[in-house]
Length: 69
Image 1 (cartoon, rainbow, N blue to C red):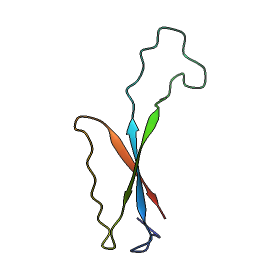
Image 2 (cartoon, rainbow, N blue to C red; image 1 turned 90 degrees about the vertical axis):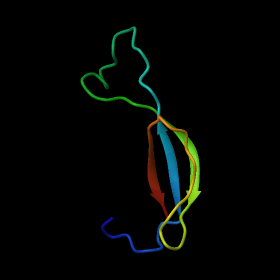
Image 3 (cartoon, rainbow, N blue to C red; image 1 turned 180 degrees about the vertical axis):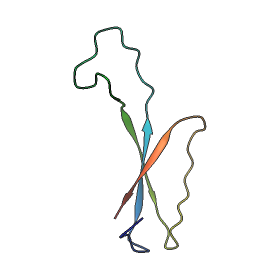
């Protein structure tokens, strides 16, 4: 990542993208024609001095990570 020095990232924020709910009503104009997803905070994981991180997550689910300093 441009501008990030080794050792600056201390933790990872782990988020899960939730499945899209089925819509049985008219879509709101703010999300019409676009994407609207919800995320759930799973937790954080420490980042080691060498930049590695270890944690366990369930299979067959969509997760993403945010670097925290």
